[in-house]
Image (cartoon, rainbow, N blue to C red):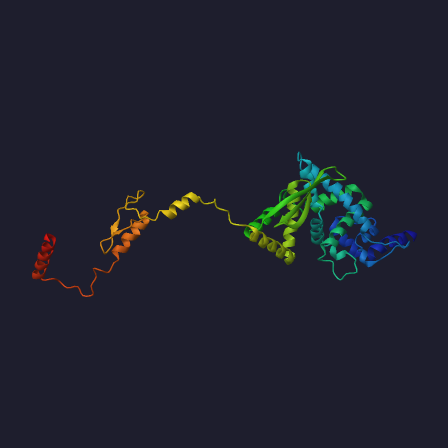
Length: 353
């Protein structure tokens, strides 16, 4: 009799929380031993629940624990997977895998937001809340089953099914080139200023901080374990700001307008005063231009015309003469034989005179 009571007592919570057990099994790949850890991992602080001692009861502490466990587990996996890779590469890859954006997307894919208890109406589109819940679940796994269970969960449920580790490690959107392209198209000046270099408190690795400046206007800052990474982060944040803040763009182009107004045309060399004086006094028209060898021409009155000073002008002058209307008559008439002889005689007589 007492055995049946014990069995019923064991089955009771399972019957009451059958849906939660089933949902967690589909996510984790195993049934929880201590369901209270997982219930707390899915409890958002907005609910305002307190424990028997009056202290807040939510997933923040489990989130803190899960964050530390994730760093260790993912670091272990990355270290084993990429043999021979340097510390900077390993750190960068781990950062991508445990970033808020990655964890939020993983949580969405696994259906974790639907299990979160919060005071809000919907958590399905809150990636920040979803990523925190993912970390809290890792913390719950650690307390429930230990470090090895966390390792198996990340290897078998995450990296083998939801994430391509090699693709994450080597694929990188070049935000810097995108920002440079934007600045060149809009003809604005842009520069990256490396502000400082510090050391990570936990690993001792160098951390670089960079800031973008566009037309002298301060853009966003970025940090990373290399200058390249900090430039990328600063570019990404600045691109987002350009899309979200029209006043930021207005300030950039106002600064550009001020700069272009202040810029002057290049100053030419001062003219030669003696040469100018000589050219001013040389008002006599030369009969032959030495540079072209062109002879002066006669105009319609028989006077000498000044030669063109360049071959091009000479060509234009000839072209103008060809277009005179002197030889064109409205109704051309043919001369008689007598008229031609008379004109010839008159011309001969005139030459004799």
